[in-house]
Length: 185
Image 1 (cartoon, rainbow, N blue to C red):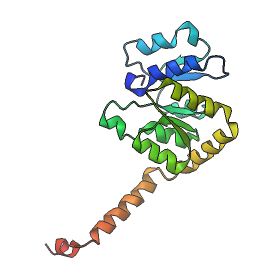
Image 2 (image 1 turned 120 degrees about the vertical axis):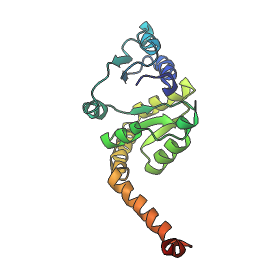
Image 3 (image 1 turned 90 degrees about the horizontal axis):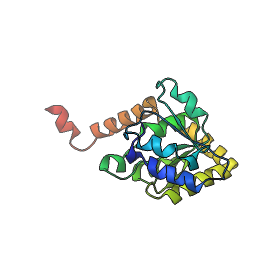
Image 4 (image 1 turned 180 degrees about the vertical axis):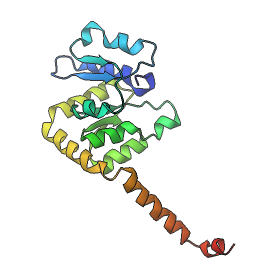
């Protein structure tokens, strides 16, 4: 979904800073900005840099994602939901083996730091976003290493793997102090 709180205006400003580079930014999805993002993306100075595609069915999305050199998650800190979020897009990129450029927000940063599969940027600062994109674009070996780490990390971040973690937590809580009294009631 193309929404303002997802840092797209800042991304388009970053694209202006990257003019002259051999790169393309693709925005894909339903417009929830009342036409503001499509209008900005169609500016003549962004021609050849930004491509806006219509929404695709969720089952077709992995094909588009897997073709990317990097995935962007630029949630802005507009609410606690964004501040502490772990968006599905993070796991979609990992599953596709796509390195990630994402907002330096606590939970996203924790996962990217632990897994080594992406770069963090300030989503409010177009120059920070541009530097992240430029760094990812200019380091093919680093990008390839992050892609491999993303693919490897995706196995840890599936429901079956996380279910085992949750079951172990429940088991440990059941064995804690006072559990015998709870069982006797």
